[in-house]
Amino acid sequence: MTDPDQQQRLQQLEAKLDAAKKRNAPKPRVDKTVDQTHLAWRMVIELVVGLLIGFGIGWGLDWLLGTLPIFLMLFTLLGLAAGIKTMLRSATEMQNKQMADAAAQSAHVEGKTDEGA
Image (cartoon, one colour):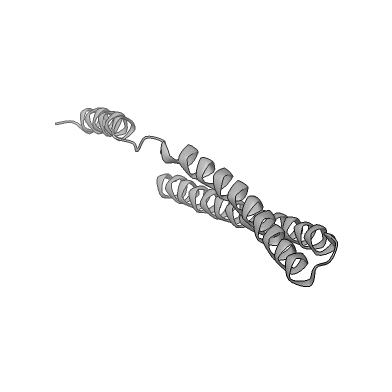
């Protein structure tokens, strides 16, 4: 075999390998939407639970002490604040996770391009 013939065969083999890699490349994950839906429901539940706990504590104190619904209003507002704080913490946690995944994916892609060079 001649040297140009070997180079041509090598290029054809590389083209076939690239086509096979593209064909067998991992598909985008479908469960990303499931994760976001899960996060949305989690945040709603955290807010509602905070409100309900605050409402329950306030109503219980007003009932025990025989006061006007001052504790009911106060603890309902505190429950709302606690629910919002928990929602924000969950959103920050998910955002950090997404940023870490994107950085890992970016590093993985950069690693592949450096290997080809």
